[in-house]
Image 1 (cartoon, rainbow, N blue to C red):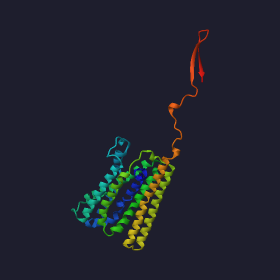
Image 2 (cartoon, rainbow, N blue to C red):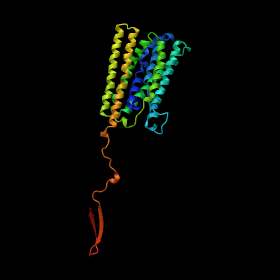
Image 3 (cartoon, helix red, strand yellow):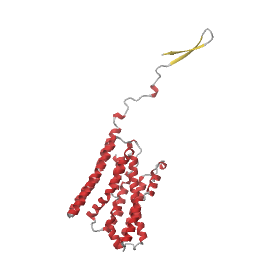
Image 4 (spheres, rainbow, N blue to C red):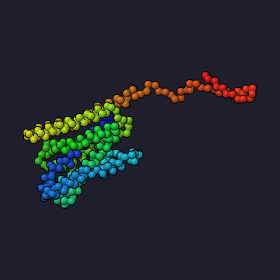
Length: 318
């Protein structure tokens, strides 16, 4: 089944990458953060700095991935091995960071100190490094001959994630930045928890790259370009006309359909891979039995003694 292949891992990683735009959508919820917490612009800038630090400090995620997926981690099967551990760590951080920010904005908890809010922001944005590390490094393992292509695909969808999330915000939560914060706390972790077990390193013969792999990977790249062009069109459209709610819902549905299209590519690639593995060209026509192979020129040696008492060795060939 395609669910247990490297292609399913690639699609799951792409979809997770598409949900990681929270770090790049700070401008949507920063005004309500500033007004409800009585911050001045300098304080808001300080919180934004912690956002940038958390989103780019990927040291811990790299250490964790090496611990649960590296060569030293290979051994008897264990539930605490695999990229899903890194995904789970990122999901926990994402939920905790944005959820407590939402509690502070809505007044459910007392107004936290600025330093505490900086910690919330750091933890929330730090989750991105765990998601990104698990997706990118696993893809490189599964497609070693096209590692650069896979990194480009993952980074491409990560770059589009902010525009994708903004389209969701404008369709369902326009004018409700506090609700948008709650969505950031719930949606990406839930999506990751649902997909993380599909993101696995495949060490079997199915990971062997072929010339056809490049064709399907190029299809992934082409889809990312189409999604980028469509998002640009939506941005121009939203700035030109005011779409009704059904119009926004329709454009979002088309966007989600484009994002789902890599699954079709993965199914076709997996089917082609299975056909290649079971092709008669990969099966020997005649299986030789090692025991049936005999020497072509066996010899028997005879030792004779001539009249002078000298031994002579003769080999008779059959």
